[in-house]
Amino acid sequence: MSKLPLTLATSHYEHINELVTGRVPVEGVDLTVLMLQIEEIFFRQFNYFDFDVSEVSMAKYCSLVSQGNSPLVAIPVFPSRVPRHSSVYINRKGPVKKPEDLAGKRIGIPEWAQTASVYSRGFIQHQYGVDLASIHWVQAGVDQPGRQEKVKLKLPPGIKYESRPDKSLGGMLISGEIDAALAAHAPKCFEDGHPDIVRLFPDYLDIEMKYVKETGIYPIMHTIAFKRDVIERNPWMAVNLFRAFEEARRRSVERVLSGTSSVLPLPWAYEFMKRMQDVVGPDLMPNGVEQNRTTLEAFLQYAFEQGVLHRKLTPEELFPAQVLKSFKV
Image 1 (cartoon, rainbow, N blue to C red):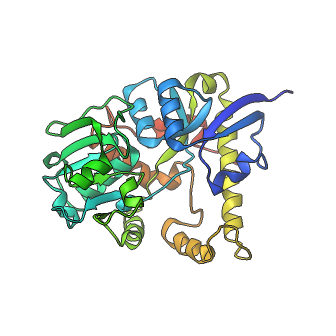
Image 2 (image 1 turned 90 degrees about the vertical axis):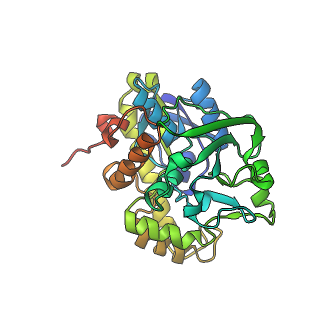
Image 3 (image 1 turned 120 degrees about the vertical axis):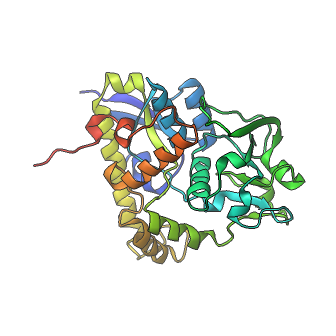
């Protein structure tokens, strides 16, 4: 029986490496993998639906689901997870010295519906008590002018939102036109070592690990989604692809924790991974709904409060029924 062709667009991750290389096959599928930059994948998929299945922004996918009849259908695979206290940038000469100082300030965002920004606004509001309506939000590209929102928003009453297609967040941070920026991708001025552009949380690693440990929120950035017509023609692909991602992840964790060789180009990788297991659990990058329920429910709450979602969603509404449960023998 011939296998069905399927094109997957994703970025490069160690924990999906064996799927990408074909060492973990997808049963019934002849898989072509395109390794692309994240921003390119999102631009092409959300605007043109170029790929049969691809890595997608969690926030944008959930927004589409909340609007009804989403053109994409995801499986609960989460290739990118990043706590986001590290993603708040300030000008050291400006008025923001601590999280509570963000109240009443001008804060830049690449997109209101960027997943990282949803989580950042979530902890700014819920952890530090800052009223999001007190802030003047400025949307612009991180380093290049012209970036735009990719999904329709439903902003709550009182939110002050301004789009600046002629500016970049990095430029406005340097000039003082904004007081802080929330960005998944660090501004180039920060990466280049501009003396005034720094993180709000310089000790972010300890803060983020404590946050994840105490709240159970292990931020999910991206998921994997089929085009709806592809999965409706071949619904069996959902489970088969999910299983392949899971097996690739399992092998990766086993390999990284072998502790006998330099699997990663980090001399203390083994020790750090063991430390991570104490915080996020033995799977390191768990897939599925139940292991991620706390994170998913918190994210959906933040996204609804912030007007990224058009109605409240439950985790079960995000994924097809066949990947929510497994058979028992």
